[in-house]
Image (tube, rainbow, N blue to C red; front, side, top):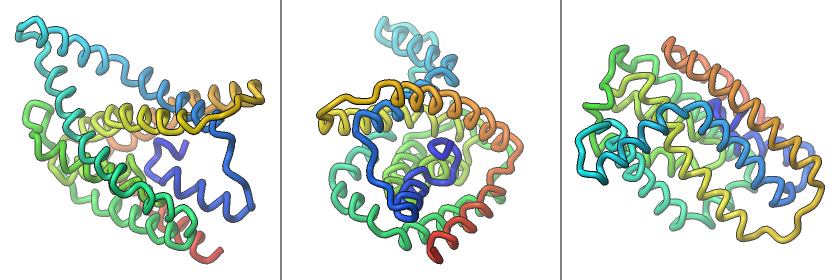
Length: 247
């Protein structure tokens, strides 16, 4: 649920692992949970993904059909570049922050403040046809910064889209389509560290739950964004951040 709602999944993991003295889960289990959330995005946005594939096919054949899909694909690639560079250059520093729950609490409060500022975003924003390369890069930078635990990836990218003047639905759609290469990258990085495969039953249950809850969370969040009420989640983030700092 926290993977998609703008309340920072990494921040919640740091908090509960620290509070309850939990160890890191087995890497195979972690990889499969990522796979479950990835499948949720693919299923929920299957129509947009099909348009992207059709757009790429048309572009390769030199046809002018499905240009919107091809443009969306190029913008996603463009936004992924700064995220990837930031992840590679600052990987060790980002990982060190997972050992600092109080700092993570402060970042969660910052996420709340960012979300709260979206209440002044335009009601009628730019459609995909007017979205530019600078919008994509700024959203990609926001996603890179969100590697910091406590900064929500969906919250940072959706908010940046709104601050860039994009339409509410486009901001949400672009954010989650952009998560596909990000989640794939996380899966590949963790897969390289994987050694043994154990407890397949628990892993299957965890993956299925991550998929089902992911679909429900996406449905809820898209509805909140269309209503222009994403700023309301800021109160939870600030409250949770204060709780993390206190405890």
